Length: 248
Length: 390
Image 1 (tube, each protein chain N blue to C red):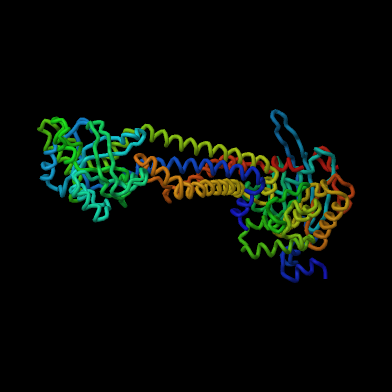
Image 2: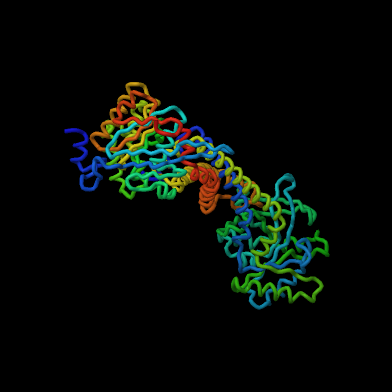
């Protein structure tokens, strides 16, 4: 029995969507339509994305590569609902993110998107389990249920036995796995990862990439990952290359 | 776990800085509590003064005397239950020029009736009433000077020349905090009938104190007394004991205001210390707040974390200051001050109310100090904050 099966059998989240409630495996989950993104820096107008189109299907594991300044992180931020396009539409799971207000997008992010960053940014005064539990503070779940879900998420990333450890008692790879557990604890459909292995050595990076692959294959998480690392990109089924704000 | 507990745990992020800040807040709150105690003990005489006693003095100034016959006139005023009088003697210990205590001539029987909250053992009371050279002294004065019943004391007159011999017949105490327990009372007759007293000083008194039927009658009685003497050569100024004490405090109003001002300055300094600490923490955690915003935290949640941390530091500092100050003053220094500065601070203790106020003030000041950093943290642009992540 796999860990995912075990988690499912306990009725614990994160779990794959029930077939009746989730979109079909081939359904488009993320749709980016003719998106422009322009930043104004003083008097300078910086066009970061230019008429970009992209579709990502549910359950996909796709990578975004490109040189610095090509717009990878900007695209990820738009898909993650952290920012709004200057023009065009970003539709994720049927929701038009550009039409949402700040508060609405924050609430949407909390239940639909899991973020993994290059630096883990765990709260140093909290244990691994408390760090994982953090996003659930925004929910109405009871304390015991929050704790249980955090334990499950830690079990999924293989750190159940480190639940009581603080970040400074964990290695870089372990901290990133805790950050991934934090990203999946509220059972989002999509994980966006911005250089998730950028701060890790090869061994730890492989562990983290293996974990992301497992979340994709066993938990049906749709993953979009920005990376400079070709070895990391190889884990993805599709690699998109960006250059000067457009897909190459 | 909840947002509040996360905020409290965040205090330990930089424990060295947190401890220094708490000590800073603690010292500020200790100083604040001390100054509030100085103010409250100074004004205690007025706050706790009896409202059913009316004091009358010369209309022009305290220094000028009233004729003793006024006592009987006042006794006849409607609403007056009893009346006594005092005369400031102003003598010193011949060999202790540095020691000051209030010494006053009075009519013992009526004084003990009017000041019925004064407690004197019955045997001592009787002894004082019987002995014209007898003195009744406050418990604090007795402690301060090491005097006991039966001791002979000589005072050197300043207003009334010569050496005056007394025997301490009684030591009084009082539950009411406004009663000065460092006074020296003796028989008016002993002074007034002394052959050495100049004829012009005979049958003169400093002020009268009338006990009225109830506290509501005090203002009316005061008006009646002053009205009665309005057409006489010497007019009076009458007021309730509380008003009298308050007017006495008015002489020190500038000093009291200065103490008040200093306590506010201390709070402002504390606010700046805290504000700076919190602002530094917010700057250091920009990336972290960006991540929290990314995973769904709203500006209000971030602001709550900042505010909660500040209040926790303020409370900890307040507890430190009050925790040190309360036992220090109430178990040690307060007693020393009462014994040695009894005229100014007859009761120098930190009131529980003041301690609780100090804790509340520490939290409120901390909250106010963190408003701007909390607002700034809350309105951080997520993208800008995350850009620092990578």
